Image (cartoon, rainbow, N blue to C red; front, side):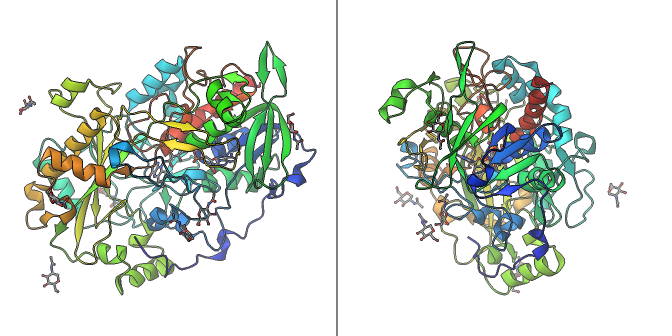
Amino acid sequence: MIPVRGLALLALSFFARSAIGAVFQDPSELRGTQYDFIVIGAGTAGNVIASRLSENPAWKVLVIEAGRSNEGYDSDLIKIPFMGPLASPNTSFDWNYTTTAQSALNNQVLTYPRGYVLGGSSSTNYMVYTRCASDGYDQFAEIAGDDGWTWDNLFPYIIKNEHHVPPNDGHNETGQFTPNLHGYEGPLFTSLPGFLTEIDDRVLATTQELAEFPFNEDFNSGNPLGVSWMQSTIKGPLRSSSATAFLTPALDSRNNIDLLYQTQVTKLFQTGTEHGLPVFRGVEFARSSSAPRFNLTASKEIVLSAGAVGTPQILMLSGIGEPSELRSVGIHPIVNLPEVGKNLQDHPIVPLQWSVNSNNTMDPILRGEQPAFDDAMNEYTTQGSGRIAANGVSNHMAYFRLPENSSVLATYGDPTPGPRTPHFEQAYGNGFFTTSQQIPTSGTYLTIINVVVSPTSRGTITLASSDPFAHPIIDPQLLATDFDMAVMVEAIKSSQRFTAAHAWDGYVTGIYTDAANTTTDAGIVEYVRQWATTIKHPFSTAAANADPNKGVVDGKLLLKKARGVRIVDGSVFPIIPGGHTQTPVYIIAERASDIIKAAWP
Ligand SMILES: Cc1cc2nc3c(=O)[nH]c(=O)nc-3n(C[C@H](O)[C@H](O)[C@H](O)COP(=O)(O)OP(=O)(O)OC[C@H]3O[C@@H](n4cnc5c(N)ncnc54)[C@H](O)[C@@H]3O)c2cc1C
Ligand SMILES: *[C@@H]1O[C@H](CO)[C@@H](O)[C@H](O)[C@H]1NC(C)=O
Ligand SMILES: *[C@@H]1O[C@H](CO)[C@@H](O)[C@H](O)[C@H]1NC(C)=O
Ligand SMILES: *[C@@H]1O[C@H](CO)[C@@H](O)[C@H](O)[C@H]1NC(C)=O
Ligand SMILES: *[C@@H]1O[C@H](CO)[C@@H](O)[C@H](O)[C@H]1NC(C)=O
Ligand SMILES: *[C@@H]1O[C@H](CO)[C@@H](O)[C@H](O)[C@H]1NC(C)=O
Ligand SMILES: *[C@@H]1O[C@H](CO)[C@@H](O)[C@H](O)[C@H]1NC(C)=O
Ligand SMILES: *[C@@H]1O[C@H](CO)[C@@H](O)[C@H](O)[C@H]1NC(C)=O
């Protein structure tokens, strides 16, 4: 891990700004104010919703966020792209969740980061920008019974959301993406890698050499299969988040959007009955468990955007969920929706490293060695360029399906919705990247990250207590199915074939000692059980479903068996998309904003 020492403080201009919309930290200041919409969670989805709804000057919008400001003297970790991985776990930007003991991972308890800051997880994530496969959206549309969620129908929202900008190093990006698939006027900035590395040409040479690893000009076309150049939510030397792209510009330019932050929503409360169904237009919130609680109501809708952990937690605290589970923690059930907090899906990740014959500066920087680290920091602070300005994860990312005749598919079946959806992901990293291993004190390395992106495992979020300030119980069941483990084994074997290409001759010198036993399937499984963790994509805990007896929201994302509440965040996807999840959240939030506008003409 990169040492935090040596971080330079960025220019004061980042937090010297004045909002027109009001910003509160004291809930009592809101007393008496009326809102049309209350958005819960200033995260990835919530800020899109709040910003888009406030485009209508006749509407008054309030956003309530539990976490801290994204600005200020101590926010470098969430601004400087290379530092993103240091923003969690266990920092002031993190909820500090942990999982239950994961049975497939030697009963390890894992940290489970979620952004606790304006921008939510878009402020603390690793900035990978992947829209994922078109057939995943088409499946969403089918399960939700609403054609608006198909890839083709969402495409205008994808373009509306994005502003592709040149890479920070100004290199010629021709051939590294497909320009006409991208947006150039949206709020969210995206770009190709801002710092080229010595492995880039070898990765591309491997795509020429081995048919198994074809080059794909742009993994964001709806067909992500193959090896592509990375795209990230970065502009110049800075992260672009839902706070910088949506919330701050809206607060700066409009007086009909208010923000209350460092204040946690403790539950929704019933405000009446319509057509025999309970109406939940009330929100209760507090600054801490011992602080006074406050109530507000929305005249039109509550939009719940607290993410795949926070959203089911708030629902259950409000008496919405599986009745006997709610009673067991002393909560009076009001709405019988047994799938709240069920269906949790996530992506397991395992890195594999090789020693390389190189004098790269990446490993010394990762170890915080001098002069490499200070040189890189100085370049960042004086010129806004170099490695520290770029996404450090990798410059190429790849998505693959198991072969048609794979014994894994023959044994377990194929859970993917179509031929464009991958079974696993790889990312090729210049340097020793790890999620839980010790970084070796010397040497230079190549890392291939392997991720199962079409898991069949399903986990749960349940309440530990009726105290809203107690963490919920998070059990992602990582790699708990035989299919998921079998796919991970295939991914690792694939990454071993990748580095066996001639393109790596004279560069890759041997597998890292931790992976010495990955020469057999049994040895790989043992390695995976020890080193796998979450890639931090919890999803689908309040899923959309057209069937009135299934799921938690309908095709328009309205809470079932109730009135007044819509859910817009990663929890509504029936199935987790086969890639990184921030972009799918941005995409559905853009359309959901238009659905809400249309619902209140
Ligand atoms: C460390 C990390 C790395 C990741 N890397 C990537 C990546 O590189 N690329 C990618 O595509 N995806 C990545 N992801 C996943 C991606 O960021 C998330 O899937 C996505 O941002 C989720 O959006 P959301 O709107 O559902 O939730 P969030 O963005 O998490 O927003 C939820 C918000 O609600 C707030 N909230 C929760 N409960 C309450 C409450 N009771 N009261 C008030 N506010 C509340 C939270 O504080 C938060 O601000 C990463 C995630 C993490 C954590
Ligand atoms: C979290 O960070 C705090 C403060 O830096 C430290 O005291 C604590 O030990 C850390 N906890 C874990 C679980 O790492
Ligand atoms: C998470 O842990 C850090 C370090 O101990 C702390 O500063 C932060 O307040 C914690 N987050 C929450 C939500 O309590
Ligand atoms: C970038 O490269 C392409 C293809 O090699 C070339 O046509 C184009 O002129 C280059 N652009 C610039 C600005 O040099
Ligand atoms: C908020 O409303 C709920 C439901 O009507 C009520 O039980 C609670 O006492 C109210 N709290 C405050 C602080 O007014
Ligand atoms: C690394 O540097 C050493 C010392 O300068 C040199 O002997 C060696 O050839 C270099 N290795 C590579 C791969 O460039
Ligand atoms: C699958 O097909 C490929 C190419 O035809 C072949 O090389 C391979 O052995 C087959 N694998 C199995 C498990 O049948
Ligand atoms: C490899 O397997 C052997 C035999 O089971 C074991 O003793 C050794 O610790 C393993 N090595 C690693 C790095 O896991």
